[in-house]
Length: 435
Image (cartoon, rainbow, N blue to C red; front, top):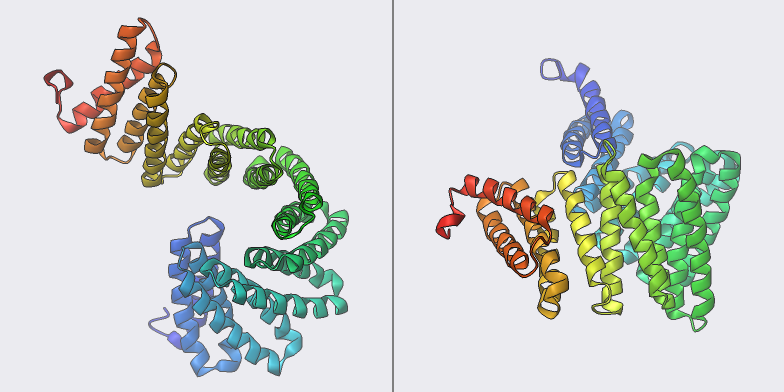
């Protein structure tokens, strides 16, 4: 219809495309969302050229949507370009009608700040966040009920960008104000703002931790970081009890932050406990329907925790590193990311191979199992030829172990033999001939 009568139907087409982009984004389908956003921008650009008063705001809105879709798709430069154009349009509109478009300027600045951060332009990210906070502070003074949540969100974003940029005092001050605002908001509307309060407390912990590196009195700052992390985790535990799907991934991220603070404190045992809990969260989530994203967040956070612990105490946490790698590989496989699952499984084999060289009796069986696990990940990716070498080595290792210790690991050996038969059938090889 838009082709037959563009003047009549193109506005409806553009609106539908923008709505489609938002719906794809809500489902995590960022590539499809970006395609819809790009088409919406094209149509609105044409409409705004003919009727700027009627369609400039819609063009800016569609550019903001495109910027977000590009960010989530990993297209950082494109996200910044779209966000900057949206901001330019909103600034021009705000000059003519500030009451209507000043909030749009502030929201666009906040979105652009995130795009700058993702693109690595931290100074620009901080500057955009500072301006967004300034605009929303003025709006909140006039209408706190409407704009305090926006001010709190922008302060939280400012804290994150400033901490990453190294402006530690600004990060802490912005975060403290965000927490205070969200605490007040959560008292009035707990269902809406308790998740925001938990997130802002986690950001405050990061800010204190960053400041502790630069501050001579690092012990006090670490204590404040632990206190903020503890409160965030307590809140997330309550939220997870009510809605596991919505909040378990965030609980995992908060546990990761808690582990980082414990590492800074030198308490590696407590840091390991946080890592173990994130693995348990993955196992809990991996059995839940339609919860791949939260499970993936938990699994990836556990890898980060144990990698850092292994760096702090080489060798002491290697087995934990491998378990977390295999857990993360399973999470990636669960959401269809087979290539990254293979990479993680290969890393687990590398670690166990090193451990088995030092202690074959303890880690030889684990290496055999890790090789079987790697072959399984290759098979899921339909990389059958690459799957054959690790499964062949796995079976050979299990045979060697059984000769040395008859009856050892029968279930694992049976699993590897079954896997080898399947992979050999797919590749046309016959292990009996020494293939």
